[in-house]
Length: 174
Ligand SMILES: [Zn+2]
Ligand SMILES: [Zn+2]
View 1 (tube, protein in one colour):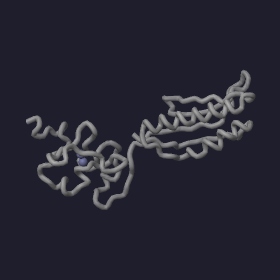
View 2: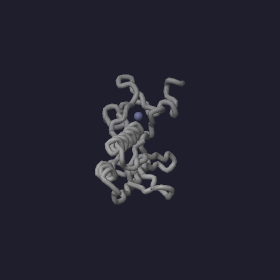
View 3: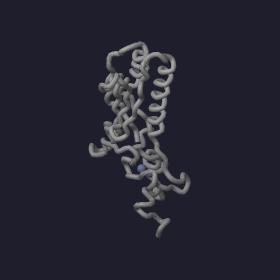
View 4: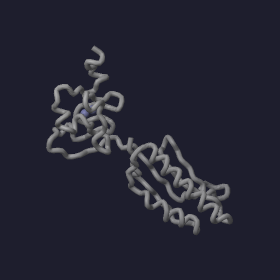
């Protein structure tokens, strides 16, 4: 699963520490995040940066890092007295559902590819294709929309290639 930073609202800095954080966070606007592990790493590096800024400015009000799992939102704020907190930035992340890609070879129906499902044969991580010489298939593209056994014409056109061995129940189960 890939992710995308679709919104990054940065508010005018209240002090030097806020300015430092704003200058750091701006680089993450509209970025594509390759997988869950990378999203975790991004969250950790933002949290680490906030901790670093806080310890460099011990006399200023500490910046608070927050991650809201259900909203998929990272934010940083400063608690201002008893009132509501002042936000420094709000970053909204969403899951990338599919990739739209123009393709001469495929029909229009295949132009939207769902990540993690081969757009040609429909195989997935848990339902791969099989060829005796090449074993099970692997992803042929970074987005995980086409498998090796469909992308390579030699394997794809070989009649002994079996696609989606679990759901289509090839000779392994017969
Ligand atoms: Zn395939
Ligand atoms: Zn496959």
